[in-house]
Amino acid sequence: MTSTITVVVGNPKPASRTLAAATRLAERLGDGLPGLRPGAGPDHTIDLVDLGPGLLGWGDEKVAAAVRTVQESSLVVFASPTFKATYTGLLKLFLDQFDGGTGLKDVVAVPLMLGAGPAHALAPELTLRPVLSELGGVCALPGLYLLDRTWSEDPALDAYAERWAPVAHALTRHN
Image 1 (cartoon, helix red, strand yellow):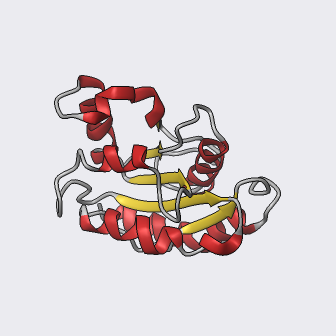
Image 2: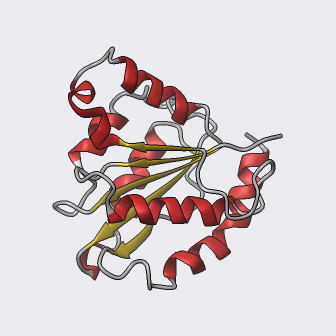
């Protein structure tokens, strides 16, 4: 059985730190998953800023393809910078494309948010994780919050992956 890992990034800046952190998290969570070699990056990366105005309605072919990619994935890291104590409107527009209750059925959904300071450390748990769960995602892993300026030196991402990768692996074997 092969696992598929996807990264979805809702940062309005292309090639952002959010994208880099999400890619690293996906890489670390994927170590040891069936069909993946250690250190392999995600199979798919969806930088939502690239979808542009297609996110503002329904029926855009690129957006529909991105939705299918997510739905066919075993594990998806949903990442956003923290704006006004929550995830971005860009990510919200994308999540609106999924059917409630079933849109993320059988997808292990991992919420990741980056922010300027510790004041919003609960944002992934209080804002992003509930919406992923409402869409039917398997949200057994807690959300991860990192400081955007220091995330790459912070041992928190690696510690999170070490702690939660076995759970992600177990869940993806059953999906």
